[in-house]
Amino acid sequence: MSKVCAISGKSAMSGRHVRNQHSIGWKYRAPKKNRVFKVNIQTVRVPGENGGTQKIRVAARMLTSRVFLAVLSGEKKLSQVAKAPKK
Picture 1 (cartoon, one colour):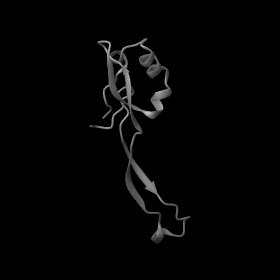
Picture 2 (tube, rainbow, N blue to C red; picture 1 turned 60 degrees about the vertical axis):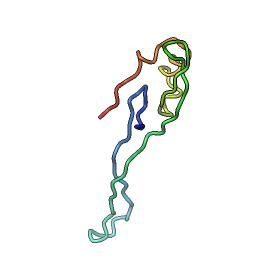
Picture 3 (tube, helix red, strand yellow; picture 1 turned 45 degrees about the vertical axis):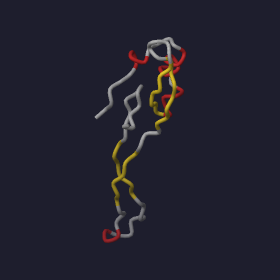
Picture 4 (cartoon, rainbow, N blue to C red; picture 1 turned 120 degrees about the vertical axis):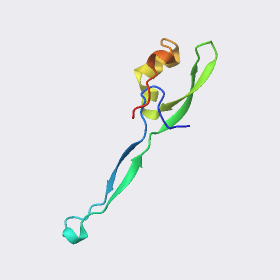
């Protein structure tokens, strides 16, 4: 399964890791390595559309958001707030 948040659509981002060399010259410049910043995805059970429960994958940051709490309490349906994954 892909690591994408069902509510925010947040997914992994690519970036760079730069090690600090304290400017000791061009020959010894700081090495830069590519890396991937992964999303902290948690599996959560929420009320489903037909009365049962449904497992969704949510970013840890979204667990305390008002949108997620509305879905958890049943005020909003998951289909109303779910976003497509960002590319």
